[in-house]
Length: 300
Length: 308
Image (cartoon, rainbow over all chains, first blue to last red; front, side, top):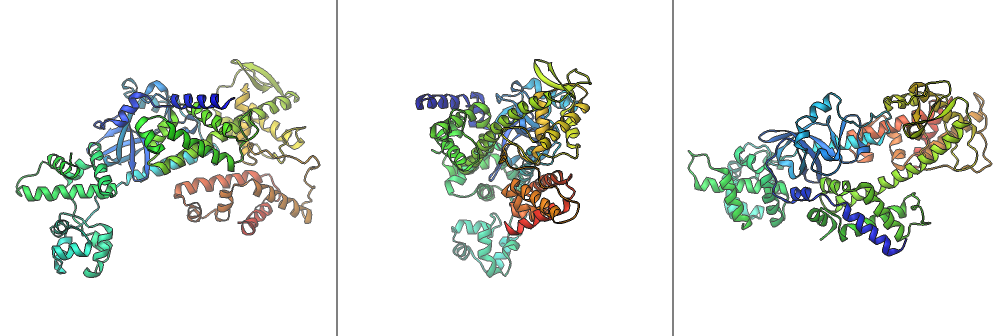
């Protein structure tokens, strides 16, 4: 085969391996409201996996992982044909690796099961009406490692966290050690407004900041982190929705910080804004507050 | 724009992704044991392009979907693609070796009066001469278990050409017979080859074929006690050691301590458990028919200290 012919074959094969247009549209477009039967990419940090949503709750989803190589499937996995989903290929649904994942890990929608399939397939799978992978007989079967890796990754995603747990009295402790806004700002190398938010209990310190405060407070960094405030549940719930993730990631990219830190800043920033603008008796409209916050910080 | 960004925005491999695949494929084939595709005598740039083309064709849209699902950046994309390339090469080699095994079985079983060649469902199959000829339609897991329960057989030599050694013939036909007894019908060529491959891959992976030097005969007959027995055990341990991967050698001294295995592999406890169980089974099946099983294992463990 000539070089030219070889390159032509390679280019054609590459083009033929593109995902379907509707998969690309789903991938690039605004994420839909999560619903059962959808196939999403779940991601937290460096762990990402395709998952099928089975049950959707307010802040969590019940899922099973989805892969695409039939030969990796074992008896616990169901093989769905190409026309059973919008992905344009066979899919392997690992029915017995069921996990509850926090909504915050949903990143992008890839597609969904065909509506005529999704309502019946779980029943069919349970009664043995669907094709499954072959059972594993030998301990050295490479499919055991595929399963172990999927289980590890889903477990890691299930522990995705950014809020932390804190008693909320960090500001009081710092003030008790004579730290005023300018002093705190200088010690932490942050802006005075941020220092004020920390002292008011409306912003959490990072691990690095806690370490800088350890000697002046006589407490360990982890002890100080345990005193951090926790943003209102209403803000956390909204920020955990996939529709907000693009904004969080833009903030992270703009400030050169991690996604977790960007979420915290968005949460505490929104909370601080609301505290200055509303009275104690009304529950703020957190959705509008978040819109306003991102409008300001992202210039949108 | 790097390959990761290209895939995320276009949902298709463009110039960056193709170039990355060519580089990674060249890297894998340069350092790996895989032969070049048919029609090439070495891993030239054209052979590498052929490999990348084959990978796209074999995986169709699944490769890009998998990248979108799992890659989180350029680094993880490269790892994912390297794994895809290696798995593809292994699958190709296995398919080639399985084809050779099927042809070898045709030769061996045709010469054995216990077996009958039949034609079922548009393909060739094997049944017992004195048994039912109807196509078997059961659970392959059942036949795998039947194969795994066969004892007293092992493949000590696997030659690319020339007559199959006597002990290998006995091993193959004994397992084939046990499978067909269990099946109670005709088993397709492909299925029988898979079953036998799985049974003996634990002892000697068929992808890496061992050559005999022509002069090698049976291992020296060992008396139950005495220095010859130790020598045979050492030889068996040496043979086993040569078949272990670097990873298997690294965890061998730690079998029984999952924490240590996980630390050595830098893996989660779950994956460490899978690796440890696989190696334990491999050693068990490789030595279960050895009269000096304990000596073989002890010699094997001593090599962990001499050759880390």
